[in-house]
Length: 286
Image (cartoon, rainbow, N blue to C red; front, side, top):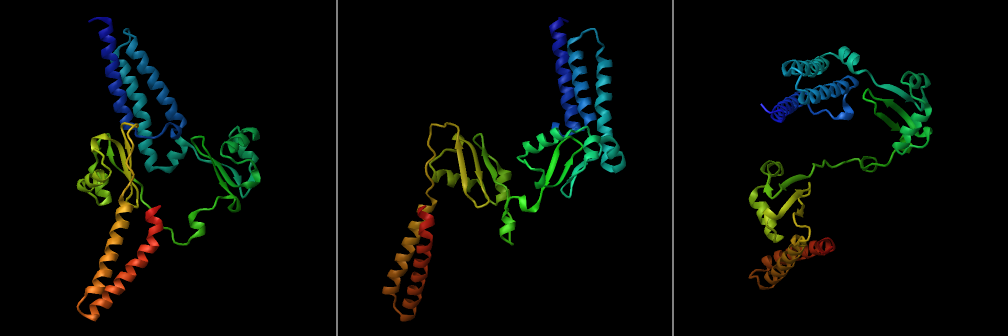
């Protein structure tokens, strides 16, 4: 077998193996890896790279080594899920740097953190005064989390209003010109609705790069061809026209009705609709 073919086969096999191992280890982000998991990742990558290029190394021995290095964190993670003491031993605990607004100097020294490094991490979080901090902790993965004092925290919607509406995340209903049925089902919509909305905008679905629907049912569309202009939405204008027509029809019926009772009913309905139209006009014309 030619040398380049053997290297290609070994490399391809190792890539497939690493992909399977990565799937087994899960989707934990690099910043969330423990120190041990980080070392394991580097070691497995180094073994895989050497094994794919060095033809003198036995492939079986190399694969065995990779499996041992990869299976060890997999086993420890499964045990950690069921045993907190074991999890604390493997991953460590968070270290409190500030409690009740006071810096715990002994904990800084324990984690080999200088006050300059601590201040630098605070500045990265746009915190420039230690007096603003109520609580700060160094997580086991090295992240520094800070809780500001109540008077220094930004105002939220919940601070201003007692009743906070529940909002759902926007759903992507079209991607790369294909309609996605699962997000549509979450919204209680169907393909016919999408096609009708695209027809209103005079857009072909295959020309849509991505389309999303927000919790209020409004759709945003981005096209493949950025030079094509997305036609303006016409729903508001159509709603205003329909309201105008309904108000006019009710006024006409109030005049032409046979009985006085019907005339009063149509007149009241026309007045109510006219008041609604007056209130909605600034929003629909905006």
